[in-house]
Image (cartoon, rainbow, N blue to C red; front, side, top):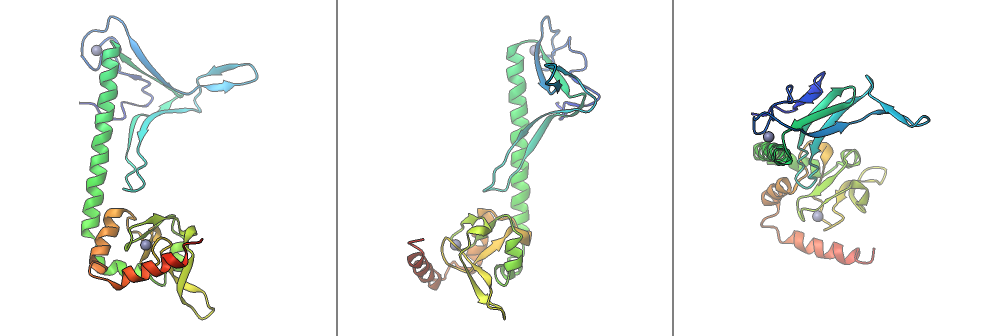
Length: 226
Ligand SMILES: [Zn+2]
Ligand SMILES: [Zn+2]
């Protein structure tokens, strides 16, 4: 019914004919206008004008870092001259419009979640393991890391210990700063660093491992003061 973005490019007004409300489809006797965008300011003279150099937008964005879901909905996008207007017949229809936008946005969130679940289910988990050792270069290029033993997600900068030293004495395998197990994977590996993925790895490698729990206790004791 609604094709997003509702306003784009040269079209600066929605609906194209503002005398009919896009929500209730009735002839609008009066208008409630959602006016959004930007004007080019002239601070010296305290004025502002529309400008061909401006592209207006109106978006709803999700940054769900734990789930790696970054859904977005462009309600208006790249609107020429910077400004756009949505016309309704009443505040009641304006409210319904916001609900329609949020419903559409939630649909996108669900689609992203579904796509990510499908990706995670398709991963060959036997191939992932090699990214958790001899990976110092990969970890240093990652913006986040995850541990598939304790399922913590953290920035690579907080890693305190590296094992598997190379010929120059520099450790090449990260030890998880939260649990002390060498089961860290960086985002640079290309795998989704989210709990769902880490849990699958845990089930593959650690489910029946008792020695890892002992190692974790030892590490936490050692770093309890820092
Ligand atoms: Zn209406
Ligand atoms: Zn850990």
